[in-house]
Length: 541
Image (tube, rainbow, N blue to C red; front, side, top):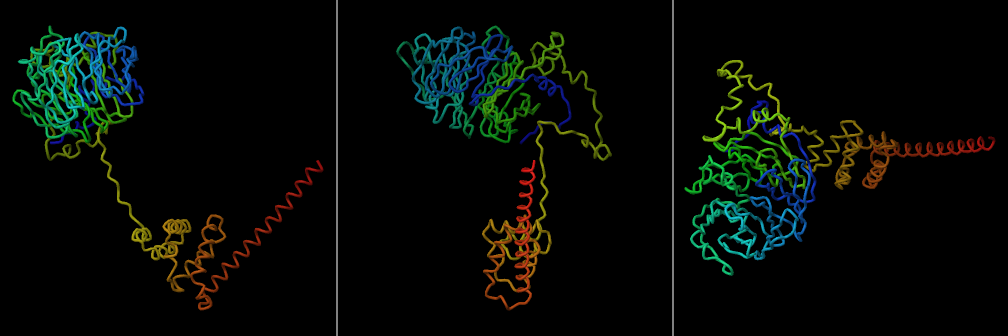
């Protein structure tokens, strides 16, 4: 069932929170940003791939602090290691490269993919491993110390679009072939060493989405901090895949679809989840980012952007929302900070965004504290039928505009039916020279003037000749009516002398033209006299 955002004008705690991200910085790039990656440790700087370089942004100033530009082709994927000292990247050059952030040098270069690398990730359980996926339909587990491929996975039939690490040596992959596959390599990974590389082609389990998958997003809580107390263990077995204008939420253990959410009008290009695991994000080329409650996947808030969305990134501290758009624009929004720690805690998302059992904050929401209970409007009353009349439309709502059907004039109807003679006759009845000349110009554009004036009786020709007699010397219409008069004269020259009225009208046209020529000659003569007087005056001076 298609769901829509809540009615406008009802200011909720959720909308107030997301609207507090009002400090926006816009950066223009030449190419769209395919992915946004944040560091796993404070201060949570973030990487923006663009073309043949990666910009590392300072989270405090939202400016570029470092650049990684040692790429020969477009970069499509990047990721920080959990100690935030290394960056892995891959792209159209078919290479997976590891950089050190300290001096921006290349630490390792892995060759093995035969097509564009679409995703790269550091392992969260073994800092010496890298997982990469490519358009060559393979997944590779790479070893940093030996600079070699440990595992090759060849089970998909199309491009790899996403990889998630579920547990140590357990991986989840999604592809354009419309399938999600689980790979458990724990039983055989010990056999891979040195020069030995294992190959897998049979997954432990498979889920069929049914359409080409664009994005894979796991719900697993932050696995990089082994000392953190995860309070949402159920989310470890959940993940989402986006295809077309919808995304599905799956239970990995049961292999079942939990939710089918379709709130966008066009292709979904990115998914995300905040660090609390309670808010889910989706971005689409319909220019909207939508925020959902993970309990029921109802839309809590919607943000409209000026261009189609290509990537979304939410900082681990929930202080920054970074969005990349198709026109190369990068939007960086951060939440206002008034310097009052107590107030920041009071306004923080963890305080009111329905934390799960076992989390730090167990207080009710601000809405429950401060929003008075509204009286239920009884059906059949006056207030029930007039409810919502004062609601104002907000920027993120869809506006359905009903265009009124344009009523056509009779000559326009004839014109649409290609009945040019009838169209000319009906427009002459209006006696409006502007409309008549507009229709004649349209007939010239359609090469239909000959059709409109031919095969006419004397009575049908008289209104057209009367119009020409009246306006043939008008400066605006002369250039059109004189060629039209010549065409009429050529068409009906064989019948001249058979109708006194037609002969008289042609004679009037001739007389008007003679008078206009005589007037023009007199005007030119007068202009010459004036020039002579002007020359004589200047000579005397």
